Image 1 (cartoon, rainbow, N blue to C red):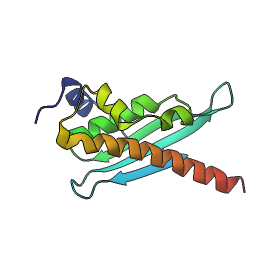
Image 2 (image 1 turned 135 degrees about the vertical axis):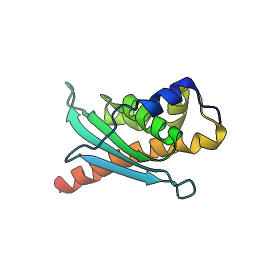
Image 3 (image 1 turned 180 degrees about the vertical axis):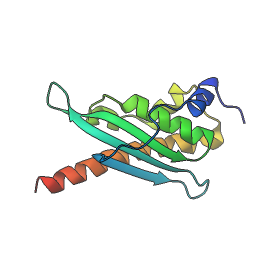
Image 4 (image 1 turned 45 degrees about the vertical axis):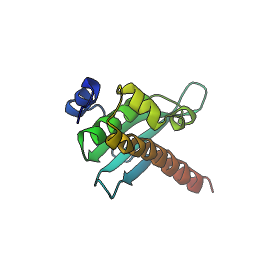
Length: 132
């Protein structure tokens, strides 16, 4: 299986790996077929316009090189973005950033996208409960 140099770099030296204490949102996704499991943690703040932004983001992934690399990349792409901007990050953006993925590993980029969406949805549902 041929990974791009960028995939190997993000696998060997992942960015934003770890857990956020008291996160504002947590997304947990997995693929039962390959066994990859991914947690995305977000801390939400406000920008100068008062919009919710992803102030901090971390991940914990148990899986293959592609799963770890895509988790790392999705956190890099989302950090500092508004929630609206972060929601638009797609698995295609992740694959493009990495210079491609083997077809059999494309599902990993989808997991990363779903994990980010799940963390944002978790944050929003907690926020809605607090505002009731």
